[in-house]
Image (cartoon, rainbow, N blue to C red; front, side, top):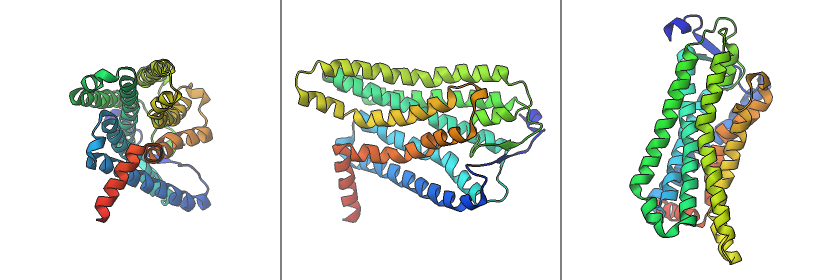
Length: 309
């Protein structure tokens, strides 16, 4: 890493806007969004752990998803907020790689947790009699550890690949954090082989949980359509609504950003899509699950009641 980093010691993150008049309004907006994200997800975690009726696999995965969302936004937003108020918007070469590592590790863990939640809904709806056996505590823990392990190995591989590149000319990253595509565009090395490896490996890591979610919901739809009563169908689908909303928000923006050639990279459009899955989706998670879920509403009321009493 030292041989390749000797050509450059710092990067400059341009951020969301180069207009000086936009810096403070953007700081206020994203600071509020970050506070809402942290407080909302902390509330979800505390409510789940304080209510014995929420000690189920679905809420086990949800509490871990909320924790990962806090970590995910904390990797990106605080540095972005500092840069919005700074004249020199620098990040060190090593700091850039560290940010890239944790961004990918936590982001991919989010993806695998969403897949784990889809499997949980599949078993609950399609095989309810064996639910307690199939989704036992050990299996849930194994799914969580597997999600973290795969994600961190993916992040480590990607960062090692990036550390082998040379950066000798421009050191201005046209983004608000160190993401793969904007950094690749700065390299004066031949990045064609890196792009192929990145695209192939990303397809494997991101598409696998997405296909798992897709397969799970196809099975769920087939099973629910066989339920004779309309109320039974509505009840079965109601347990999936919040999760499907999160999947649509997260994967919609991720697919737009990452599954295109580097030549099609667009700064403005990618900023909007990236803000969606790095800031907006983690912030919306507590609202989606608390407003659309009666069990979570009850858990939150119970927890807030304990706090006030």
